[in-house]
Amino acid sequence: MISVAKLRMSTAVILIATHSSAYAQPYCPEPLKQHSIVFNDKAALADRFSFRKTINAVLKSQGIAVTKEAAEKLVSTMLSSFVADDFVNRNSQLRIQVSERPMESVLKASDLLDADKPDNPFAMVPVGLFNRLDLVPEDWSDCGEHRIVYTFNKAIDHGNSPPASRMTIIFEARLRNPLGGQIGCQPVAEFWANLSKLADGGVIADELDRFYYTGLSANIGPVVHADNYRFGQVRGNLFVNKVGTSTGPVQWNLREWIITSVDGNSSSFVPVTVKTNPLAELYGAGVPATAAPQARAATVKDEFWREFKGSYLGQLIEFDEVATDKNHKNYDKRLDRTAPEFDLKVFKSYLFSKLGARFDDKFNEFQSSVSPIDNPMGPAIDNTAFKQTVVDPEAARLAKVGVDSTQLVARAAAVTCAGCHNFFKAGPPAGTAPIAKLGAEEILWPASLNFVHIDEKAALSPALTEFFIPFRREQLEKLVCKPSAPITVEQLVATAEVQARDRSILRLQQSIRALAPQTAPLGAGTTGGLISQIQDDREAQRLKPGFFVQNRRSH
Image (cartoon, rainbow, N blue to C red; front, side, top):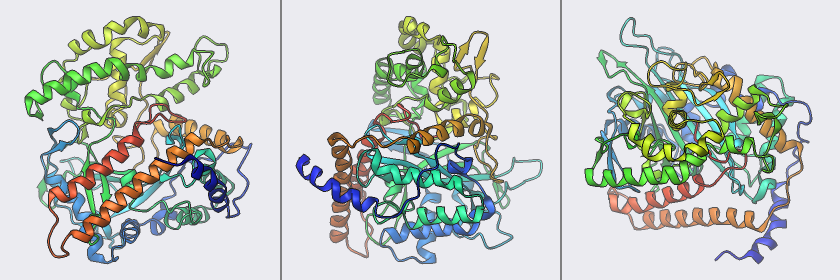
């Protein structure tokens, strides 16, 4: 039981400690520059944010000796995960197939880490840092995500066939709130906002280096810490089609991992489900063929249909319902298609940014890909019965916001990783559909840069520059230009609960390390409890409604 009295007594002490550094005044009311949301000066990032530096910082944060061998061992755990052809979703107990990734699995960790060799095409280099404060939960129990994106230095051309090899690894640190409430995250918001006062790329990169690898104060940061990648995640976009003379299947694929250490001697990338990516076959007519056992898969499909009708359908149209509700606390005339102040560009920016559903992790699979079997709108998935049984009975509710059953399923597809990265990149050819219609205009998901939203040259996608960045910039401006709301006991309790879960995980890690022999590998039963507790912690945080985006998604 968390003591409210103790929380109240500690608030003043933590507040003083949190704000002990001399933070500059927030950058207001002038509009923020883009680099307060995305910093993509590739030259300025190169040395300050090298892949090896980030891996070494992760190891150091775990108390593991930083050596060349330890770094390569950690990266090798990611590469070895590409050999598997299935994983078990611990919540549904379904064994779900994934595409084998033979070309990624034979990459050498030393090559990914070594950016100094000019003839090494596989070196991972930083191309962008992303401020995702827009992902804070409604209770402010964390301060959103702060990301580093790595790619090959350039796409590896294989001539006429196969297509060029590419790979993106995104470190998505979820930063804890040291105090609670908006005020606890205010220094982070002010830090990003004040970057707009700077023009020199090297100076900006130095400031970001401090935030990511040292921290803003004793209580805030650093961003690059192993705990932030079990609270957050690491994701990878995979398109390695040829290594040496060997070629593999040509198919874009996305995976997700957390980073943890259980024995105190080594660290691992642990494959986990890709969030907001329900197994696409759950929308189909039959029992999902890629999940076993089949009887359990049939039960999970029935559960998915019920929960979609009861929760996810409403979440996918929540933005539209709020947009025309003049009594809602988040009503904005610019988003109300019936108001004279309606602004179509702003409407699209908010729709694309806020669209989402908080899918229970028991429905998620372990990859998102452009395979037809992974697209709820694709030709391999017959969603007719799903629409008739789950969506059509809500036709009257959908009609009030101008969404039909096909657009509703298209929204569910669009909020998956593959949907955002490629399914909807150019409007309907096969398997795609508009997600909304205003009068005669069909609203299509905005374009990526051929599967990615930042490429090897650090160029940004139209989806980012035209819609996502303007939305995120507006939310940051709101955050730094208005005084923080008074902290509530409920917010303190929410933050304290996160801290309590952290302490519980730390105690379990310490117990395992004390019991485990230093020379023998730990068994799956020993490590399974720790991984389960970590995933419970992440799921509790992920399913909370958001402050800026009610139904948060990873991309």
